[in-house]
Image (cartoon, rainbow, N blue to C red; front, side):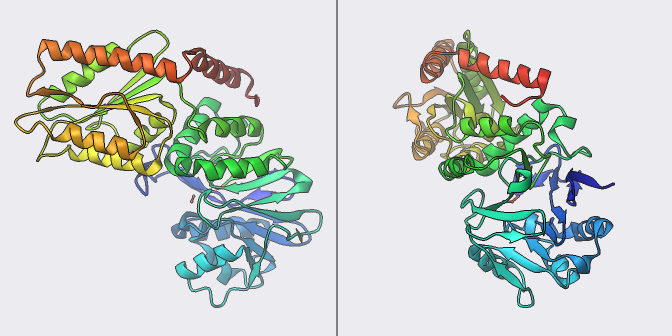
Length: 420
Ligand code: FEO
């Protein structure tokens, strides 16, 4: 079935229902690798798909035009989930030139044998006319890689945004107005937290520049196309690029013999205050993808581990290492955990990680118990939870209406499906 975005502009990508691990990102709803095609006096293909699915890309293109009629293949981003099929595509499209910027050419040449490809190197001043459509380009460094760029068709107010505004979200439907918006927004947020969050400052610059474009539709490299709600995803990105906090406390931990778990439970009970949302994850049954999502918009985080081999438990180390890499901004934090005989162990190691994450530490020492927490220490943990809740409210200017406002916005999206 042909999927037409605008007259003569088609989706020709691949929906990957089965992927569950995208370089460590838990993709519970699969993904799609979106490629597009414009059939005008000249024919252009925008981006490709992951290498194993090249034959599907060629098949989708061939439904619309013969492969030897393709004039241009545009590469917006060299990461292999979008470029992996280029070797097959360039071999099949014998008359096509590959359009990309200089950095992208260099990156592609390190991945593939590009010696036979006809490159057409463009910059932001380039204009490529296909007839009634013009391809224009905007460099978007670090959203997601240094060579990343947007392709924009002014006549259609259509932006091809590769990773930006994407979601790992496999659906047979291709447009945002055909699927539940809260579900798409949830996946867009998880995607932002796990793929883009580290580059928030660079993305802010991209958004500033993109504000100069008249955008009606956004066609990303993954997930559904923003046909009706492009304003909504742009607005959400404005919040996410600054890690705008909700009054939310995030607690995560691993435990050996339930002592650290008891501390986590007591902190959780204390943090459950009016207007504060508390999320508690035992890392044995959770994963780093969810954690990154929660870290994006929490105000305060509490990380716990017992001492194992003089340090923290492996799952806690993995989680903190992942979060440090993604660099969520402006978080207050505490550490907690139990120990047996080595007091300076797991919880202290967590403190060092939190410092490395530039968190505001709310105490100089972690909350600890020797072996099983006593009633007194559990009371202390509950008090600590209350303090975290208070801090979460303060960091949101004591205004838990923010959460309310966000929820209302979500309801408004549910009802109308319209951008704000
Ligand atoms: Fe979807 Fe940065 O690749």
